[in-house]
Length: 457
Ligand SMILES: *Cc1c(COP(=O)(O)O)cnc(C)c1O
Ligand code: SF4
Image 1 (cartoon, rainbow, N blue to C red):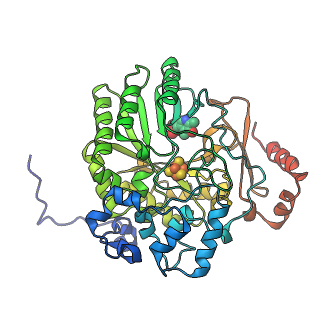
Image 2: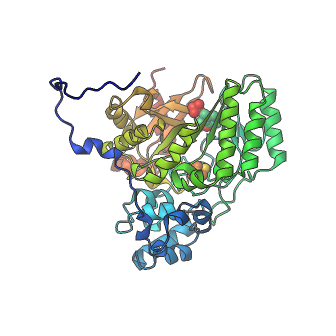
Image 3: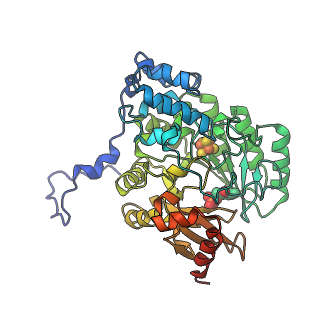
């Protein structure tokens, strides 16, 4: 049937006021050769910039490399701050030229990408006293190295320990990236032996239907390894769903556009899954609308064109996306490019990441404002990954929330029945009285007991 022609029809009287242009800003993606603002990339043409090998080769991992790329774009004071930040950070630093080009170097302290990827000494806050390095206790629920079986029917496989970029807020700083001055890491390098043990376990558990393949980042797996991984999992009758997690799409979309082997391996797994009536989706990780550019859109179009379904998981990060205009724009922009906003995580307690956490209340306020702006299936669920291994809980499902001390209490009946889990708001967001109590370790058990006394059950 041809498209119906509506020209010449009188437009029905509108019941709503015309929308302001700001309501449509989410559609305006950054395009053009924006990378040329970086002195080192001023002469880089598009073909070079889209080459994932060029992106990899020119990735920034040290202060001298950063200085070399920026060449006078930032002040010496800022560079000194970064230098001290590198020494203090528990995560390695790794920033692709693509990310570097998206940072507003006139305002590096406020820039949402700088905050996520480049540590500066002056903004560090002391860690929360209740923080442990593996705050989600992933290693406790782990039957074999790099496999976490916490929930009944799903398991998390950590296949590799490197990523195309390193996020300051990474929950897995206990394993991801090389050792730093601050942390000696657990080793999850991809080896056939480690994978075989994980496969043997997964195949032996009939209740497991769903595998989250994460890392590190599957972007850094060789194409043949990715294919082997997908095909092996799909060959198990119990496995019905696989999610391939990769932040790569957000930090280096060039890989999707130019690493044809990796792309073909992913498409092969997705197609094979479909013939079996199984589901393979790509899970990615955009946190700020600035991260979705015309280049990302081209990568997303290539994936969608081959039938790859994409979901997004964001982290709520202070001064990055913890306000309504930014987060609503992110949700709208993701919806616009048809990447489904699945979760917004309340920031985990991670070492060196206190400046990026928000109180639980921020998530509650934002969810209230965001629900209803777009389709329900494009409306993220706000979750707290309960420290201590309770798993993800709906942020609104707390048993108690003492806003004064910043302690919230969660239960997880389907995961760890009978146990209570606590989330702790960042101390610098509390009032002077509560900050003084947190400074005294004798007060900690009392504050927890007070929060528990508020519990519904
Ligand atoms: C997040 C996670 C999963 C997947 O959980 P969903 O809520 O289904 O996205 C599975 N296992 C572990 C250990 C996880 O942390
Ligand atoms: S991409 Fe994921 S695993 Fe890698 S550093 Fe970032 S948050 Fe951690």
